[in-house]
Image (cartoon, rainbow, N blue to C red; front, side, top):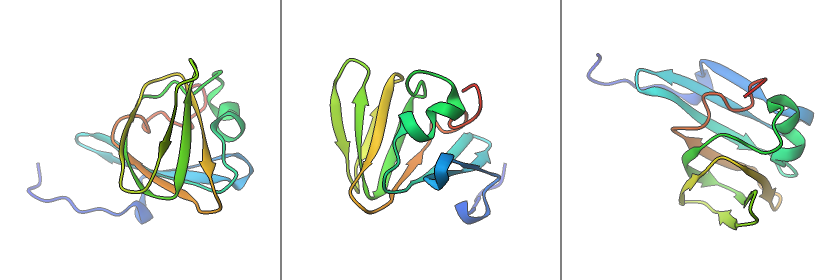
Length: 122
């Protein structure tokens, strides 16, 4: 194990594009598991731009992350709703939809849920 590892999402191990050019997921595979940076463009909605890729009725990924910029509303399958804003740490259980609020991309980092996110059958 290296004492220091320094990497950039601009040279990600994998990039997954969302449908209709509404953003992407940049993934770094680390010895501690995958870490992702997602850029959700204005107008992005999980049920429109990732559901066709995932093939599930709602997002079934757990998320543990940090909002770098932009805003997103998260809606759980049971109707619970929360807004994610810059500087916030968020955890989200499986079974949700989400959408970008406003005209600025929402950029999020995630340490738990992005390994299989926006991947066919995930």
